[in-house]
Image: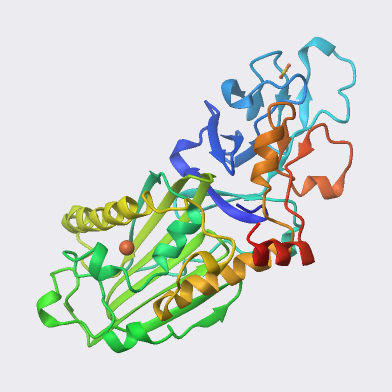
Length: 379
Ligand code: FES
Ligand SMILES: [Fe+2]
């Protein structure tokens, strides 16, 4: 699990100006709420007075109020009221981490890290969202699996015929399966996109061409460790474009925000007819993912036997190694060992602008040469 990426926090409608929402992500707790202008805010959950949980409190006038002694925090994380101090000055250290927020696709995202704006990896841009001729459905579900395993599953073109035999999912030819998947790098990730020679008898109403010239291509790509895209282009006019934004709750639990876009079958009656087989496929994947061992992806490739169809998985792991080298990987073992005695916070950009913070930042694994050796040694 990494700091310094965008993570989905909640559906837009779950975050309100009436009640704080508790969100668990990267093993940490956050509080999400709206101010009086409707802006969404995401703060570290721990009150810096004596450790109250802000998400157990309430929202008053666009501020999160701690339920223990009533300290109030605005959306920027600054404490604006300490009731027991009456009118005396509020200490400068009375602030909690506040994370940059973007609200798109009916989802509130937060940037969980301290990079300044111009250095942040991007939130995936779904260009067709909200444009004429496209319709979207958003599904949110939790799976008892590691998020890296889940992303790798989305990048795996050789599991379809075994895991989804009834769904008419695209299947590669034997020659394609035996050759390395042709890959191309994109900013913060890699992609493949290929023609699938589907047999006519495999096609269902939702996978056969309805209008336009048959393209029969599909591909998947990732941007950052937790954003996954799959395009299934039956024809230029008959496409499903799927976007998965994954929130690692901890090493063994993942909350997935699945935005399913389509440019055909736009009538409402198709919503349910598409949802059912789509969620059946999700269930088939989740059942396999929840039984994988080890739960986490191995740190190097000696503990699995990878074949040409795993090219994309290998690429994904190469990118993870780069983010390890940046020093962005959370040291989950140290965190677990120390967290009973220390309240940690994920560092926010504000930490680069001012000092004097109360909470320690979450332990990170060392980057650089040590990260490379850690992967090589399997430690
Ligand atoms: S612990 Fe939050 S106000 Fe005292
Ligand atoms: Fe699948």
